[in-house]
Image 1 (cartoon, helix red, strand yellow):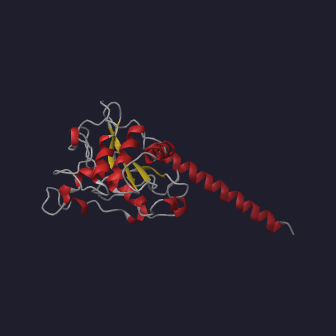
Image 2: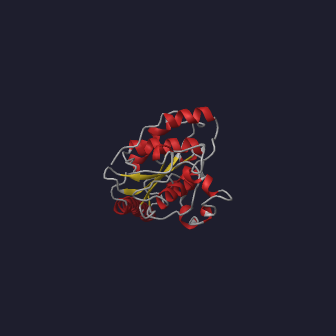
Image 3: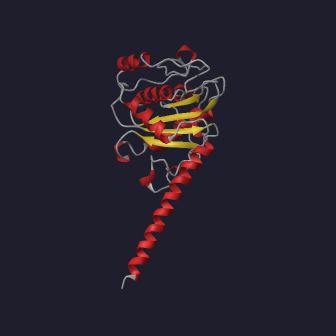
Length: 251
């Protein structure tokens, strides 16, 4: 009479063991492919801290993604209590932004995704760039969705691809000036996304930026010029936010 119960219990134990193995394997994979980059927990802590500041947006919860220098996803996190607290579509956008900022930055030249907006418009010097490097839909939408934003997000260890050309993506440089990869943040206005990404990078101490095309010769957002993007919500508030962002560190 007890045999079916014993079989079910054994199946449950095997299932839990398999799930634990998959989780540890995913975390180990992220650590193996992303040396020198923050963990999922470190990303989430810094992202939450940055999101609580006044960023000139709509005060929304955020997605954040880290990639290494090869564009491989190292971590995906969100600031809310559950994944539905953020715009679902912003998970993929954050990965696109990270992929873009890494793909078009160099050891001596940092490009934020915000720096690309004007240049990719019709007639611009980079028109068409946004259609290159398409998103790998098989990677970014792989489930189960219950794992999205967790340490074992199915996107970890894969390349999302995609090119995003508005605020929220920034390259990551360590204290030696080495380009390690990039961060992408999405979930609010693109102007707020940039500010939150900037604050997160600063909190992670990966903002030893060598130089860029934005204001101050860095990868800062600009709202005019050939490497700028439009204001999003309140021009005066957004200008004030940018003026109050922490300065980048010197290698």
